[in-house]
Image 1 (cartoon, one colour):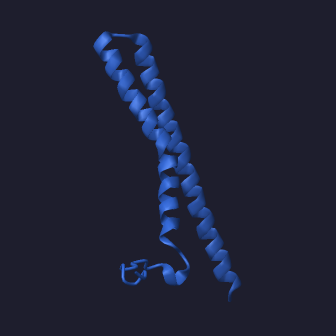
Image 2 (cartoon, rainbow, N blue to C red):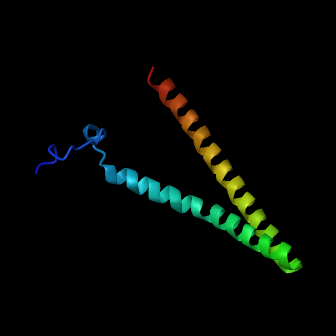
Length: 99
Protein backbone atom coordinates (compact mmCIF):
# COMPACT_ATOMS: atom_id res chain seq x y z
CA UNK A 1 0.00 0.00 0.00
CA UNK A 2 1.23 3.45 -0.78
CA UNK A 3 1.13 6.30 1.68
CA UNK A 4 -1.65 8.00 -0.27
CA UNK A 5 -3.79 4.86 0.05
CA UNK A 6 -3.34 5.01 3.82
CA UNK A 7 -4.46 8.62 3.87
CA UNK A 8 -1.24 10.56 4.47
CA UNK A 9 -2.72 13.52 6.34
CA UNK A 10 0.43 15.55 6.94
CA UNK A 11 -0.53 19.15 6.13
CA UNK A 12 3.08 20.26 6.71
CA UNK A 13 4.72 17.90 4.20
CA UNK A 14 4.98 20.69 1.61
CA UNK A 15 7.03 22.76 4.08
CA UNK A 16 9.39 19.87 4.79
CA UNK A 17 8.12 18.98 8.27
CA UNK A 18 7.30 15.42 9.17
CA UNK A 19 4.85 14.62 11.91
CA UNK A 20 7.76 13.18 13.94
CA UNK A 21 8.98 16.73 14.61
CA UNK A 22 5.72 17.55 16.29
CA UNK A 23 5.98 14.44 18.42
CA UNK A 24 9.46 15.56 19.48
CA UNK A 25 8.12 19.00 20.38
CA UNK A 26 5.45 17.44 22.59
CA UNK A 27 8.04 15.26 24.36
CA UNK A 28 10.23 18.31 25.04
CA UNK A 29 7.23 20.24 26.37
CA UNK A 30 6.36 17.32 28.66
CA UNK A 31 9.92 17.20 29.99
CA UNK A 32 9.90 20.95 30.67
CA UNK A 33 6.61 20.73 32.56
CA UNK A 34 7.52 17.57 34.49
CA UNK A 35 9.28 19.34 37.37
CA UNK A 36 6.54 21.80 38.39
CA UNK A 37 4.00 18.98 38.35
CA UNK A 38 6.38 16.82 40.40
CA UNK A 39 6.75 19.63 42.96
CA UNK A 40 2.97 20.00 43.21
CA UNK A 41 2.57 16.25 43.63
CA UNK A 42 5.13 16.23 46.46
CA UNK A 43 3.40 19.23 48.04
CA UNK A 44 0.03 17.50 48.05
CA UNK A 45 1.43 14.22 49.33
CA UNK A 46 3.39 15.87 52.16
CA UNK A 47 0.53 18.21 53.07
CA UNK A 48 -1.91 15.32 53.32
CA UNK A 49 0.54 13.46 55.54
CA UNK A 50 1.20 16.54 57.68
CA UNK A 51 -2.49 17.25 58.22
CA UNK A 52 -3.40 13.67 59.06
CA UNK A 53 -0.51 13.09 61.50
CA UNK A 54 0.17 16.69 62.68
CA UNK A 55 3.81 16.29 61.60
CA UNK A 56 5.60 19.65 61.44
CA UNK A 57 8.47 18.29 59.35
CA UNK A 58 6.11 17.11 56.62
CA UNK A 59 4.32 20.46 56.81
CA UNK A 60 7.59 22.33 56.28
CA UNK A 61 8.62 19.97 53.48
CA UNK A 62 5.25 20.46 51.78
CA UNK A 63 5.68 24.21 51.65
CA UNK A 64 9.27 23.81 50.48
CA UNK A 65 7.93 21.88 47.48
CA UNK A 66 5.28 24.53 46.86
CA UNK A 67 7.97 27.22 47.01
CA UNK A 68 10.05 25.26 44.48
CA UNK A 69 7.03 25.00 42.19
CA UNK A 70 6.41 28.75 42.25
CA UNK A 71 10.09 29.51 41.81
CA UNK A 72 10.29 27.23 38.75
CA UNK A 73 7.15 28.72 37.22
CA UNK A 74 8.37 32.27 37.86
CA UNK A 75 11.73 31.65 36.21
CA UNK A 76 10.01 29.84 33.33
CA UNK A 77 7.64 32.79 32.83
CA UNK A 78 10.54 35.28 32.80
CA UNK A 79 12.39 33.17 30.23
CA UNK A 80 9.34 32.92 27.96
CA UNK A 81 8.60 36.66 28.18
CA UNK A 82 12.27 37.39 27.40
CA UNK A 83 12.08 35.16 24.33
CA UNK A 84 8.93 37.01 23.19
CA UNK A 85 10.66 40.38 23.63
CA UNK A 86 13.69 39.18 21.65
CA UNK A 87 11.45 37.91 18.86
CA UNK A 88 9.54 41.20 18.70
CA UNK A 89 12.71 43.31 18.69
CA UNK A 90 14.35 41.02 16.14
CA UNK A 91 11.38 41.17 13.80
CA UNK A 92 11.23 44.96 14.11
CA UNK A 93 14.93 45.19 13.24
CA UNK A 94 14.47 42.79 10.33
CA UNK A 95 11.49 44.79 9.04
CA UNK A 96 13.42 48.06 9.36
CA UNK A 97 16.42 46.67 7.50
CA UNK A 98 14.30 45.39 4.62
CA UNK A 99 13.18 48.90 3.57
